[in-house]
Image 1 (cartoon, one colour):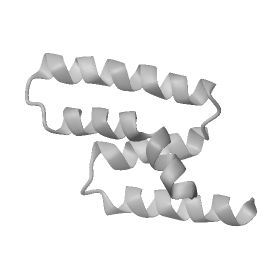
Image 2 (cartoon, rainbow, N blue to C red):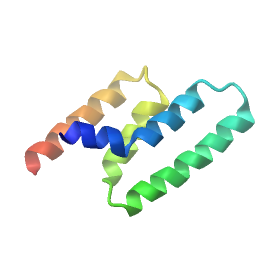
Image 3 (cartoon, one colour):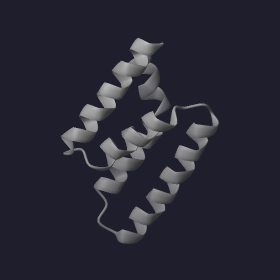
Image 4 (cartoon, rainbow, N blue to C red):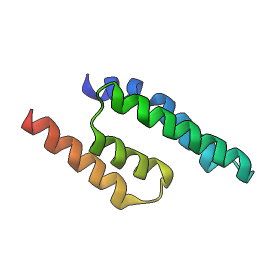
Length: 83
């Protein structure tokens, strides 16, 4: 249930980072980074966890970074256990 909620909450962010990774045009990348900044601001204002958002963006920006994905999953487990 929690993971489904997170997928819905961060779906726009996932899409934007996908567009950044697969766009070669530098001006389009800058445009999508501006969209990411607006989306992150909106999520923080709506009550999203700042650290989880930071770790998610780190993992999405480079999908080959296994350390980022591992740290995100570890943080989510710790947060779930503490609640």
